[in-house]
Amino acid sequence: MRERPELDTLGDAPLEGDAGPYGGPYPQGGPVADEKRAPSRTPAEIENDLAAIRTRLATNVASLVDQVHPQRIKEREVANLKRIVAEGTETVKLQFVTANGTPRVARLAAIGAAVAGLAGFVVIVKVLGARRRSGPKA
Image (cartoon, rainbow, N blue to C red; front, side):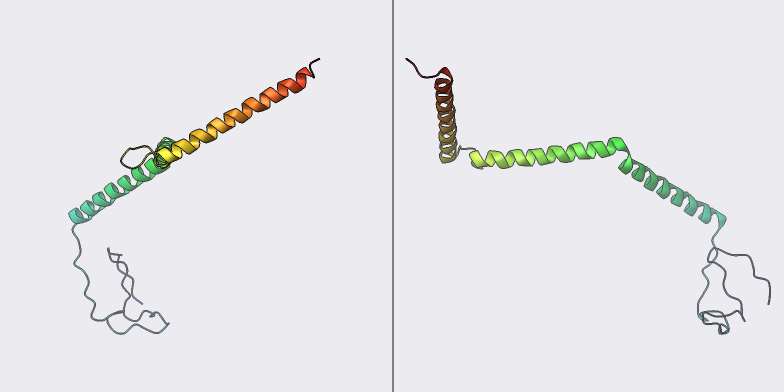
């Protein structure tokens, strides 16, 4: 077998007589006889490609660092929490005010009545508790 030539940018092409993918020899001309090799690139083209790859890699690394930095994680979580609170506040607000801003009188009246009933219940319990502690009057 002959010595293999140096690898080019496309990899090492098999030589005639080398073993094929199933152990047998490749047909004459390599794996695909009609395959044309791409023209070789100039050193300037290779350098430009490497510079572009370095730039993309630097951008990707910077983006990754930004995503996992604790300060950025905290900022994202705080923004998410603010959004959730704002949505919840708006939902509660819409329970008492219509979309055009007028109050929902029936709901407000029902809540007012419930609060007044609770306050009355607390007053009655306190009065009865105070009478029980002070004992019967003679």
